[in-house]
Length: 605
Image (cartoon, rainbow, N blue to C red; front, side):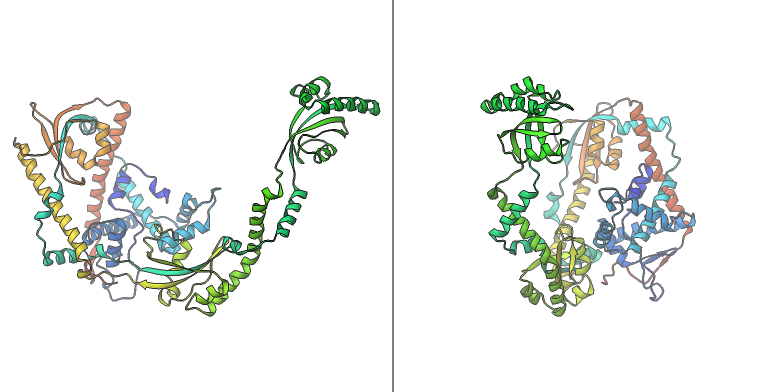
């Protein structure tokens, strides 16, 4: 969503990745004691413990410290944008929302309901969304400014070609962290320290279990009854107003102005008798006698005829009375027609139409009863606000239960309508456990009531001890695996032959390398150049497990013009990152940072 923010490519996009753009904003102003509502303040931007915890949750950051670092860098860029006069007007931001395809209907028009659904699912007000979009565009513009003007020389291009275009023959060996798990020493003190370092990983979100009554036309339709007489009446009405479609062929005897009508009719009646005697010869008779040049050679076929066909009204009225297989003489203003009904479409017998007519009648009755039933549901749930039982008895509708914890975070996975969220987490329903007002979407209505609620909390260490143990062992195993991988790399680079489970040799093309490896891993691999017939080695981090690579040979392919252009763009991105780092350093030197009273590991909810 918000493609206007996402459309940028190149260095700006890379930099925006570094500052981790999301809809996580900073703390609003309060009347609290100075410094009590933030950990740090960069210029006028405050960063609170709540911001840090939200960043860990929603951006997938490893720790509170990582989140604070990201948010602090972001705050410097916000302040820098303001200092440089970079801003976006309210009108521009509203236009961005109006133009976003996620908020448009199938005709490309802004759909307010889709917009409201997004706000409900995101837990934001319209003003909060506007402010967060403003921050995003400020960051976007700063990133673009830093990225402009990057120039790539031929020498730089040659160096990056070595990185991006080499074809390598390699073997790999994985240093599996699972092999180190048994050696991790675990005690309560270590686990408690690991837990205390970042409690936000174990945050239990605000959630609710609830029950509800659903009222819909379909529900009511299933409860309606329809008599045989009602169905027969509906069938008769349908038949009387139906427009049968008939496949018709004709043999035309034209009646010219002043012509002898009796004589022409007699000729037509003679051929009519012949057609009735031999129906299968109708097409041949049409070719022989019909004076309709447009259809004679096709056996007189007029195709499918109904009330909308461009034919004389008296002709259509006459053939509508005929059945399949009939052959008859029909008069029109054009003359006389011997017609044959070769097929009839769209006409059902009563037995064929009965089931659909019953369903249609039940649906009509349900629609008529729906408004009254909705009023009854609304009044009863209001009169008895602490239970749905009276409403269920009054309406005859069942109480349904949702016994899985629902939070704003898992609402999409549980297919919960957006309209429910704001209601379920409102004070009236969440805290007081009163019945909700009737919620209506289309022809379906619901009343909700919370049966069990929980506030956001951080569980005590003992409650999540096993979860902490698993995370701690995985973390320590990964560290041990990386340390061992570094030792193995050093031994390999010195010419040693440590025992490793090397893979079979494979050829790693330039395109495969770019597809399989991150830019950081690719940069490390590029430094491994086999010399004098001896292999080179590299340790790739950032993989699921540390990966040792033995480069047996490396051959650089000459890049064509298109590839050279692509490589220049990629190097420009790298140069842009350097510009971004320089800008951030400058801002940190010139914008004051103030420590507040809040502590990084605070867990107040």
